Amino acid sequence: MSQFWSPLVKTLTPYVPGEQPKLTNLIKLNTNENPYGPSPKVLQAMQGELADTLRLYPDPNGDHLKAAIAAYHGVDKSQVFLGNGSDEVLAHAFAALLKHDAPLLFPDISYSFYPVYCGLYGIDYRLVPLTADFAINIDDYDQPCGAIIFPNPNAPTAKLLSVEVVEALLQRHPQQVVVVDEAYIDFGGVSAISLVNRYPNLLVVQTLSKSRSLAGLRVGFAIGHADLIEALERVKNSFNSYPLDKAALAGAAASFADEAYFQQTCQSIIATRDHLSFAMTQMGFEVLPSAANFIFARHPDYDAAQLAAALRERSIIVRHFKQHRIDQFLRISIGTDKESNSLIEALQALLSS
Ligand SMILES: *Cc1c(COP(=O)(O)O)cnc(C)c1O
Image (cartoon, rainbow, N blue to C red; front, side, top):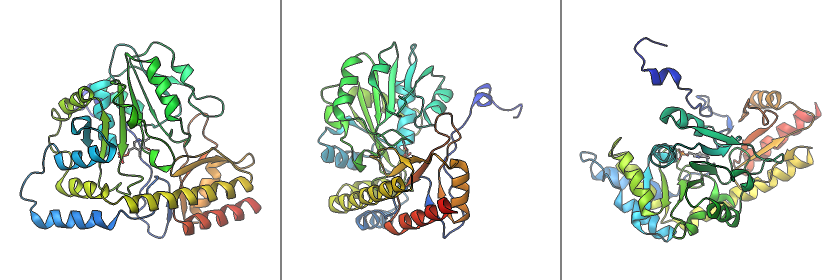
């Protein structure tokens, strides 16, 4: 701490992302990155854009990318907001839409960035416990609140709510904004984007980091009623006019033009996930049903932190959270079949030693 810090900074507890190790040759299953590269068309589009000129500022509104996302999801361009990763989209949503007198509600076990944004923006929040089997029960949200946010599928549990249940939640809260953070929806869920034209209080946030394999490019977006989008634009344009650079705008738009590649890589990840879940269940793990590109699992006889450390000695890194209720779980990102088989072999060796 320094005397020069503002009072706000002294109160902050920043988010800690999963490790990006400098070592190569690690099997990296700790940050839910996609094991397959992005579509080759993405790289072509980026190279074309950069060959053009970096002398000029990018389009501050990202109109071309907004049009591509709007067409892909069947909404109007005025219903699309872009950000530098969905983390930035979420940050602007917290400032623009989630700060009210009544507390913001989100699950006790959820994306750990949410309380960080509450700290940054001075937002009062209340944690709503997941059920004993780690599910969101929308009845538990029947309480006075200013707004609601949750990931679907939830992170790090990987559990999915059906779009019907999301709609029931929206019907119960017509006066509150409900943000659904769909970072993992493409791995087996049904998006709530189909509901935005009927629910002006719904904002759906998605990212190109996971299912589109562009975590390094930093592109996320939100879809909702044009009034919600305007609130986000007002905050964005009070913060940074150019959050997305030319390469990001071009590459992201190209990703939406290669549906075959997208479907094929998502299906591969789903197949690998289901195989890994089965294999770990056979080993005695309890694996929560996953609709994401990671699984959340615990073993009744082995300590999760010790398992994570032992895997690391075998050059496999997974994520362990030292958090109440989930400190006996491991969160394991889905890699290639080869990586997954290495993990299975390592776990078999550890569990029999
Ligand atoms: C990964 C993730 C994000 C953020 O992704 P970006 O890389 O910032 O687009 C947002 N929400 C959840 C739940 C995530 O897991």
